[in-house]
Length: 162
Image (cartoon, rainbow, N blue to C red; front, side, top):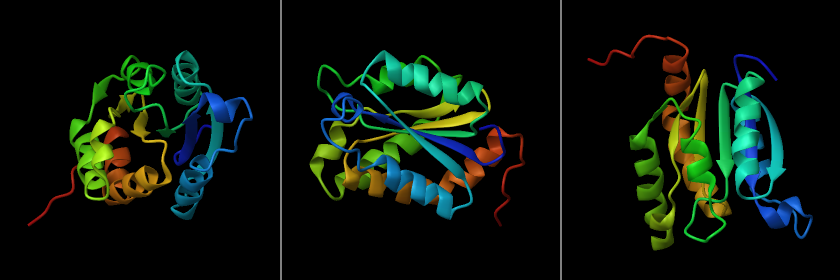
Protein backbone atom coordinates (compact mmCIF):
# COMPACT_ATOMS: atom_id res chain seq x y z
CA UNK A 1 0.00 0.00 0.00
CA UNK A 2 2.93 2.32 0.52
CA UNK A 3 3.09 5.21 -1.89
CA UNK A 4 2.77 8.92 -2.38
CA UNK A 5 -0.96 8.71 -3.19
CA UNK A 6 -1.98 5.55 -1.33
CA UNK A 7 -5.27 5.78 0.56
CA UNK A 8 -7.37 3.49 2.71
CA UNK A 9 -11.09 3.90 3.31
CA UNK A 10 -12.21 2.42 6.64
CA UNK A 11 -15.94 1.78 6.90
CA UNK A 12 -17.10 1.63 10.53
CA UNK A 13 -20.28 -0.44 10.50
CA UNK A 14 -20.99 -3.50 12.61
CA UNK A 15 -23.94 -4.45 10.40
CA UNK A 16 -22.07 -4.09 7.11
CA UNK A 17 -19.09 -5.99 8.58
CA UNK A 18 -21.49 -8.81 9.56
CA UNK A 19 -23.02 -8.91 6.08
CA UNK A 20 -26.45 -7.66 7.20
CA UNK A 21 -26.32 -5.11 4.37
CA UNK A 22 -23.84 -3.82 1.81
CA UNK A 23 -21.80 -0.74 2.55
CA UNK A 24 -22.68 2.08 0.17
CA UNK A 25 -20.26 4.81 1.29
CA UNK A 26 -16.83 3.16 1.04
CA UNK A 27 -17.04 2.60 -2.73
CA UNK A 28 -18.18 6.21 -3.27
CA UNK A 29 -15.12 7.51 -1.40
CA UNK A 30 -12.74 5.10 -3.16
CA UNK A 31 -14.06 6.12 -6.58
CA UNK A 32 -13.71 9.81 -5.69
CA UNK A 33 -10.11 9.22 -4.62
CA UNK A 34 -9.25 7.19 -7.71
CA UNK A 35 -10.62 9.96 -9.94
CA UNK A 36 -8.08 12.24 -8.25
CA UNK A 37 -5.10 9.95 -8.78
CA UNK A 38 -5.11 8.05 -5.49
CA UNK A 39 -4.87 4.28 -5.20
CA UNK A 40 -7.59 3.37 -2.72
CA UNK A 41 -8.72 0.25 -0.92
CA UNK A 42 -11.80 -0.19 1.27
CA UNK A 43 -11.88 -2.08 4.58
CA UNK A 44 -15.18 -2.70 6.39
CA UNK A 45 -14.87 -3.24 10.14
CA UNK A 46 -17.24 -3.33 13.12
CA UNK A 47 -17.67 -0.19 15.20
CA UNK A 48 -15.26 0.25 18.10
CA UNK A 49 -11.68 -0.87 18.62
CA UNK A 50 -11.38 -2.45 15.18
CA UNK A 51 -11.69 1.00 13.63
CA UNK A 52 -8.56 2.10 15.47
CA UNK A 53 -6.78 -1.10 14.47
CA UNK A 54 -7.66 -0.51 10.81
CA UNK A 55 -6.46 3.10 10.90
CA UNK A 56 -3.22 2.08 12.63
CA UNK A 57 -2.68 -0.72 10.10
CA UNK A 58 -3.21 1.63 7.17
CA UNK A 59 -0.76 4.20 8.55
CA UNK A 60 1.83 1.49 9.26
CA UNK A 61 1.37 0.13 5.72
CA UNK A 62 2.29 3.54 4.30
CA UNK A 63 -1.08 5.14 3.52
CA UNK A 64 -0.79 8.90 3.10
CA UNK A 65 -4.54 9.29 3.60
CA UNK A 66 -7.10 7.40 5.67
CA UNK A 67 -10.75 8.35 5.36
CA UNK A 68 -13.21 6.72 7.72
CA UNK A 69 -16.96 6.66 7.20
CA UNK A 70 -19.42 5.92 9.97
CA UNK A 71 -19.33 5.79 13.72
CA UNK A 72 -19.21 9.56 14.25
CA UNK A 73 -22.66 10.09 15.79
CA UNK A 74 -23.93 9.96 19.33
CA UNK A 75 -25.07 6.35 19.61
CA UNK A 76 -23.39 4.10 22.20
CA UNK A 77 -21.47 2.21 19.49
CA UNK A 78 -20.21 5.31 17.65
CA UNK A 79 -16.56 5.37 18.76
CA UNK A 80 -14.72 6.36 15.56
CA UNK A 81 -13.66 9.81 16.86
CA UNK A 82 -12.21 8.32 20.06
CA UNK A 83 -10.40 5.58 18.15
CA UNK A 84 -9.01 8.15 15.71
CA UNK A 85 -8.02 10.79 18.25
CA UNK A 86 -5.90 8.24 20.16
CA UNK A 87 -3.74 7.78 17.04
CA UNK A 88 -3.30 11.42 16.01
CA UNK A 89 -0.13 13.42 16.45
CA UNK A 90 -2.24 16.55 16.07
CA UNK A 91 -5.72 17.59 14.95
CA UNK A 92 -6.74 19.92 12.12
CA UNK A 93 -10.00 21.17 13.65
CA UNK A 94 -10.89 23.68 10.95
CA UNK A 95 -11.62 20.91 8.46
CA UNK A 96 -13.82 18.99 10.90
CA UNK A 97 -15.68 22.21 11.69
CA UNK A 98 -16.22 22.91 7.99
CA UNK A 99 -17.46 19.36 7.42
CA UNK A 100 -20.16 19.94 10.03
CA UNK A 101 -20.98 23.45 8.77
CA UNK A 102 -21.42 22.34 5.15
CA UNK A 103 -23.43 19.30 6.18
CA UNK A 104 -25.73 21.44 8.31
CA UNK A 105 -26.66 23.40 5.19
CA UNK A 106 -28.43 20.20 4.06
CA UNK A 107 -29.57 18.73 7.39
CA UNK A 108 -29.31 19.86 11.01
CA UNK A 109 -28.36 16.28 11.89
CA UNK A 110 -24.86 17.02 10.55
CA UNK A 111 -24.25 18.92 13.78
CA UNK A 112 -24.37 15.59 15.64
CA UNK A 113 -21.19 14.37 13.93
CA UNK A 114 -18.23 14.23 16.28
CA UNK A 115 -15.74 13.43 13.51
CA UNK A 116 -12.16 14.62 13.77
CA UNK A 117 -9.42 15.33 11.24
CA UNK A 118 -5.72 15.16 11.93
CA UNK A 119 -2.33 13.72 11.18
CA UNK A 120 -0.93 10.39 12.29
CA UNK A 121 2.70 9.95 11.29
CA UNK A 122 2.83 10.79 7.57
CA UNK A 123 -0.90 10.23 7.03
CA UNK A 124 -3.87 12.55 7.03
CA UNK A 125 -6.86 10.94 8.80
CA UNK A 126 -10.39 12.18 8.16
CA UNK A 127 -13.62 11.01 9.82
CA UNK A 128 -16.70 11.34 7.61
CA UNK A 129 -20.27 10.47 8.61
CA UNK A 130 -21.76 7.16 7.52
CA UNK A 131 -24.52 8.62 5.35
CA UNK A 132 -24.20 9.09 1.60
CA UNK A 133 -25.18 12.75 1.98
CA UNK A 134 -22.58 13.29 4.70
CA UNK A 135 -19.94 11.64 2.54
CA UNK A 136 -20.93 13.80 -0.45
CA UNK A 137 -20.65 16.98 1.63
CA UNK A 138 -17.38 15.82 3.17
CA UNK A 139 -15.76 15.04 -0.16
CA UNK A 140 -16.74 18.48 -1.42
CA UNK A 141 -14.86 20.06 1.49
CA UNK A 142 -11.87 17.74 1.10
CA UNK A 143 -11.65 18.48 -2.61
CA UNK A 144 -10.79 22.07 -1.74
CA UNK A 145 -7.93 21.41 0.72
CA UNK A 146 -6.75 17.80 0.56
CA UNK A 147 -3.86 18.12 -1.88
CA UNK A 148 -2.43 21.11 -0.03
CA UNK A 149 -2.80 19.41 3.35
CA UNK A 150 -1.15 16.19 2.18
CA UNK A 151 1.68 18.23 0.62
CA UNK A 152 2.22 20.15 3.85
CA UNK A 153 2.30 16.96 5.93
CA UNK A 154 5.00 15.69 3.55
CA UNK A 155 7.04 18.85 4.22
CA UNK A 156 5.89 20.96 1.27
CA UNK A 157 5.96 24.74 1.41
CA UNK A 158 2.95 26.97 2.03
CA UNK A 159 1.13 28.34 -0.99
CA UNK A 160 1.79 32.05 -1.23
CA UNK A 161 -1.20 34.19 -2.12
CA UNK A 162 -0.93 37.80 -3.24
